[in-house]
Length: 563
Image (tube, rainbow, N blue to C red; front, side, top):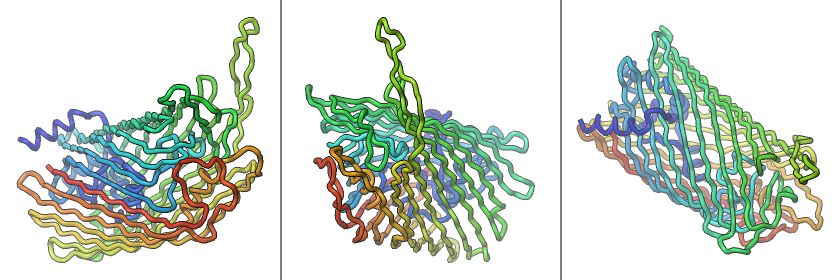
């Protein structure tokens, strides 16, 4: 009775919203909506197994939940548990090189709940609700949250400081079988309120809305086909002002490579800007029958986003168009009941084109000197290409009924190319990282223990910095906003990432704890140094112009209840 009451209480709060849920082979305690810090994102990238990557993609489909419940598939979890309440605390710190807009340290706290209920032939309803808060410390040369979404057309000042945030997320979905076809709906809303307490005081209000539709089909031979389409709407309102009256600051409107709009980068007492993203997401999945000895899973995502930066009702001086392709494929060979070999190729390919618009001011009424603006040109000079992913092979062996050992070896890659065709500027980083992994899982009636250990080494394959801004009376920000990211990625380092989870199962619920840890230690290449005069020296935390260390430490602990 208590289990049903808690399940229905969670579901009643958000019965019309949806979350991408993780894990056919991944346990329920790994289901989380998002990373609360850049450090957590990096841990997820290096510590994820092949199984968790594949099933995370499959659970983007709301019909997947209905399919699994309809078949009463044990893959939902080994203990048939579909509900969780979790709280976690995380902390990270960076020494040496860092991305200025990420900051040098982070702390966060999260409260998370997920519920799922199967109504038989009436479908499956599930959802998630989350609250989090934290601080990203020592952010410099960025006045925005999530600047990667709007890059390079971001806003900044020369002060920097700590960004405190509160995050709210509510999501849910529904899937049902109508005759031979499954249909699902999906919705998601995330909001963040962030602020800075140092002058000039910053306020960042950011929202994300996703609405989608999904369809799926299981063939007579057990093959699963799923297709999803989503609409995305993002908005960020950035405003800054001085707490003390009469104070003024120079605010910069950037457009890449340290260049900024002189007209819109003035000394003033405050500023207010709006950023909008409208996008379309699609996701296709195919999964062969899991009972076959040779299984294939294919996921393909395609996203297109349009970003506009508005300074008023009349002018939107900057914008970008971003196209993302995410192909993923896995081959799994079940040698026998105890031995399985998996091959994975997981990729994320992105292309962004930037647009700079020219407006002219004209008089609409000479008698009253009323004026308006009209767009007279649009220039496309900026481009950003990124590619990253993982190719891996995994072997897992079972010992008896309760013990599984896994060995995985992967090679991750990262490529980033940023160009401005008008000035002939170019910055390129190309890295590879070798990622061996070992993991162990014990799954008994009362106890569940899982542990994994990843270690790796990043090597530089290519690094080019061709940005030659003519020296003049006008200072630029190429060191802070262009060289700093280039130097951060031009580092070789060793890393370790660990994950330890223990669960004790009672009759109708389970109590668990989880610890995650990451350590990165390395150095920037000796030939990566900035030899020019640095423009706009300020009190902001900043990287060294010469080679420096590249160290990062992050840990996270959580406790949770399963029911």
